[in-house]
Length: 142
Image (cartoon, rainbow, N blue to C red; front, side, top):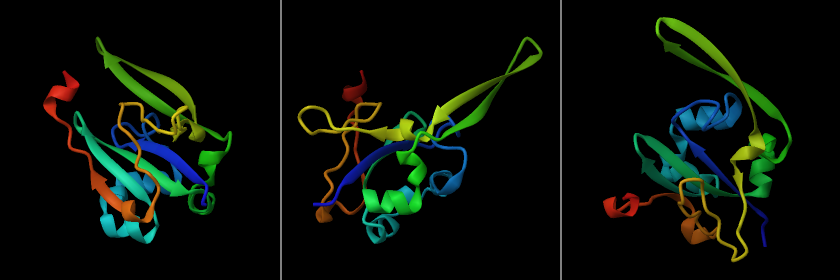
């Protein structure tokens, strides 16, 4: 059985919600995780959902694929990103640091993997290869 890595990315804020550089940043910015054929060709199981005005991706990938394409997810490597804010005519800069590994999610004691917004990761199996959408009932978020 293949070892699986679960990771979550959101296209809202570069640095905070997805890495600032590398293939992951490029894929998020080009919306690759929404392309069914690309996900199938890469043997990825992806569930996307709309969170407010952003896309959130729950991705299950073989560890071998992660090591080949985005090994930083499995490291302690860090990166920095800036947040600029203007208030009262003054602009301030905050520098933040984050680990690439912060995007990795792990199964709970029942083997289920949840994302930070409560969405569930797909089971890694051939029938789930590709990109799928989770429809959210408005009542779920009330």
